Image (cartoon, rainbow, N blue to C red):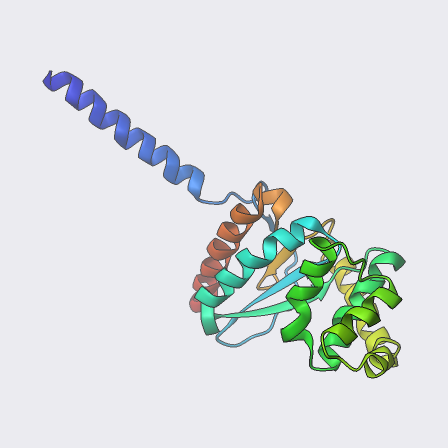
Length: 212
């Protein structure tokens, strides 16, 4: 009986060790190390860039996970959202994102764009649908259209297009941590797993900064 208990104890310890080993993300599998690293914002907060696309169902799925993670991280993290511009069709939603930012509506309408486009099927990447939807949300549609067509928004879309190429982003959602590490739902194996990897990479980046 004693031998059986000893064996059971060893099996439990072995299972725990295996689980711990699986829990730590692995470079080349769960995330990619950028070489050379890209420039990142300095300071106390760790920069995290989120490449996303309003028309992406996985990005939509990721939003509550990112919001909860960001709430827990507090001032330790500086999240920067960048709309992925992989084609002219994707540029439409990028313009919408930057127009929302330019008109001070981003905090209020970022999630509703996702929700009403993805869940309610409103096709907000079509201008008439978008302007009707904005009016229903109490927004001056004419003023928003001016922002949508402004040179500033066009320039920011082009900057986003160049950033996508500079980080060699192949799909969304993709997150860049401190200019050094890249992970995505595809690499990590899911949205929840992606956020676990991001949390690990943020902690790692903080440790690496402390050593400098």
